[in-house]
Image (cartoon, rainbow, N blue to C red; front, side, top):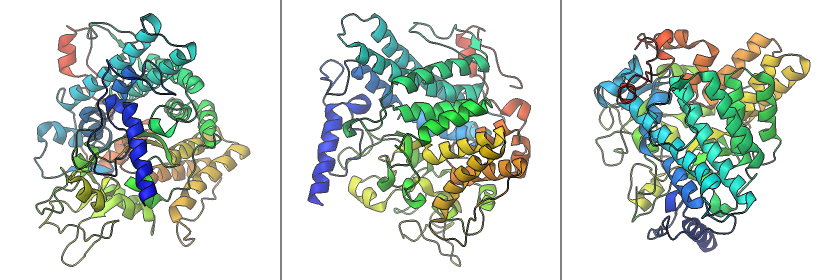
Length: 515
């Protein structure tokens, strides 16, 4: 144990020296140590493996953890709007803005504006990095250092645009540093997708396959190819999606060996399952400053000290609860059931679950963000700010491969689709052959439905469901079945362009239909 703790201490110190994520530690500080983040943009000495552009890159990585980039606005827009989740908490908590996200239509300001500004702030950081590489002659760097910095910036910019185009549709393409961004007209989704593809192709060509451990969380070839495969999938470019997903699957960097029960815990962070994971950290002395509020926003909202862990938002829906096959272990790993006097429940850590309605106001919570009580005690923080956020998992890529192969059709592709699908099911059943039997159908429609079902339960509460049902064209039926009767696909597939941004643009930006 002493050896392990020394390794963790040295790794955290190395990351601090690298000033990862804006001069803050980027790994889990399992020890009660003082914050080491003393480097600034003025005195940062880039380590071996880094570049003189890292001071700017780390500012961008730090922004990944921002409140509206990955916690509040992101979670509300990508999950609460889906048929797999409800707002949760108390009926009026969050006010009209969040309630409208759950029941439609979304309001034209509030969180839509926060999300817009946060993602364009990230794009601005990336454009600054690219400008520094091209134009700042005072920075001395090799050609390879320049290419590496460009690849990282282009990956982060492309991912940000992918979130924006799925959420808003027509958005401004800002590809350079400029003082005023509000006067740039919107590009079509097709134009934005072409821009995203170009950035990701460059990133995939030039990013490293793997980084030294002191740089955990930095952009890799697998991240770029994984997101690129999804970009192709959303455009129904099946051949490109299948081929690009296969690059990830044959890279020998990822696999399905991490048990599903472990993936979402502190012990499962940066595992072989992880492709793109945003890094958080905490310590007893700095419980939140270096962390991410993602888990806290969704943590149990309770009256008891033990279960007062967050806001209680993003509650698994009854429709998600009913979607699992009998005995599927992923259900209990995803849904935390409250206890009642007659139906006691336990958490994945063996704790007695909170009593409903005495301790908590809801019957279900997202168990994928449940923090280990050992770390809660260690860090004096009930909200789990140290927990990483999984953006892209290997199982997602495998299921994208299966979907693309099935859509292409033919005996060879159908066989490949079945093998990929069943590999995910095999991991889920965890050796219990009495559950989750292999899918054997070769009928394209039946297999399509099986792959869609698998995506739903494998990736539940992981921000994929809303965009999946929209691209599959089943969103209207899904929302009606979930009781979200205010949903109108002609309006609600996209968010409104923030009215504040339209006003700032003096009419250059135009509103989406229906708002």
